[in-house]
Length: 281
Image 1: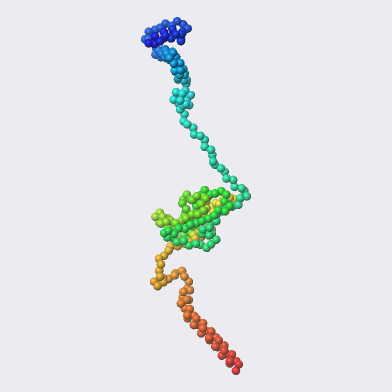
Image 2 (image 1 turned 30 degrees about the vertical axis):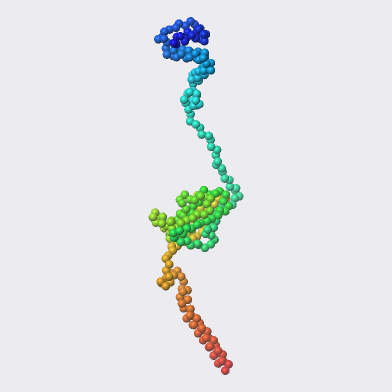
């Protein structure tokens, strides 16, 4: 069939060799030469029946013979490169604090840092809320940390989480009872009945400088006290105020004191009148 097709192409003029060709039996042809002869025969047949199909076959053959460029665009080379992610625009901005900015700080408003120490009880559902305002703070702190220092046992208690709270917070609610229970379970120092000093500072620590323009200075100006509530004991049951003064005893002796003072006044005025009469006589 291949030899017949070859003769047919010669007769129709599609291919004419420059030199006389000597046809060999099929057994003398190598596989590449047979493949090339078959492609020429197929191309000639398609061109006679359908010019469009022949053009398409020629185009595919040329694409198959081209070397791959390694970009994986579907041209038959099978090589692909990993997709590249588009660049992400940077959103980092630098905060500039003027050199003339006033030193930042924090003012405790709950409890009022100018008022005497507030008393809070260590009991269930007895929550304590600390509140504050920022003054002249341009650079918002990343985190805030809250502690309480007790001078009686020289222990500093961490009230906020170890990682702190958000730097833009304006209050913090603390549960002394839950803290005491957790400390007992973890073998940590427990809260005692005493006066504490509240300490609020940012991620720079309690020793951060207090005169940096636009940045928050630590605050340790508020004192508060904790106490353990006791069960109620009526006066008739013998309740005695251990911390009270002796004013109660004076109240019990008030009738006797009144009578004594009355007698002393009578004696003074009576003696004065007797002395005046003796002088006049």
